[in-house]
Length: 251
View 1: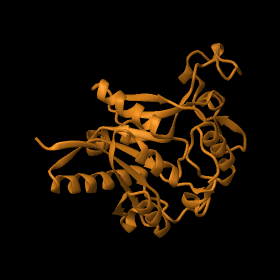
View 2 (view 1 turned 180 degrees about the vertical axis):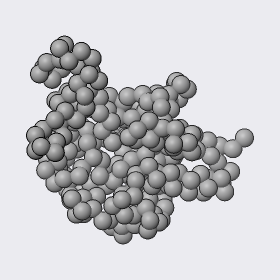
View 3 (view 1 turned 90 degrees about the vertical axis):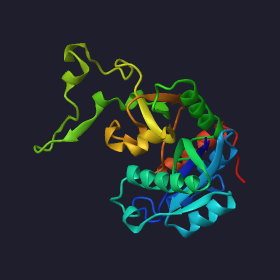
View 4 (view 1 turned 45 degrees about the vertical axis):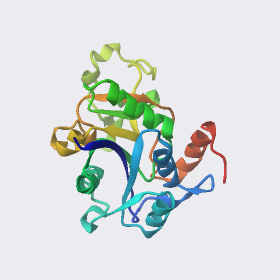
């Protein structure tokens, strides 16, 4: 029987628009992408780390951390390209490479170059969750953000007024709702730090739960707090706060 191993896949491109250069922006003295690379490298269970990118700077950093490169096709290096398609492409490349060595993917840890609120402990916890319970398709880091309950979400109507993004009836009897941010219970957001998934999630992507279809249907939480993927410069101090609380210092 072929050897089955856990691999990590980090994705990131060079053409960010809202926050140019975000993937290599210095955070506590290190490029942002260094944090998912360090977390994967320090995991007790991850045996191989791969990086899918079109960015020369990320390529250099990946090599410095001992990661293997996957060339990201031009059509998957645009603003319109979906992360799920990049993950799927990277997975099939990893699957092909391992097959040539007589190995296969047991689990794959999916990471974003711009998501630094993670560490090896969270990765290992997700891997262990899936190894201990076959009913889960994936395990992902979640942060509880009750202040961003869907009940509070609004969209701009054609009359210029703010209207509910989601019909209040979705949450039950509107008469039972109130302004207390905790009144609907904890609101768990997949914070994009860590997604540990079974190969079938990427091979049967169309069956996955929206909006992150690579997570499959039965998703276990890996408790986190303050997690986010960085899309704007104002998020950097928040990420640095998280990193300091988890033992990181500058340089």
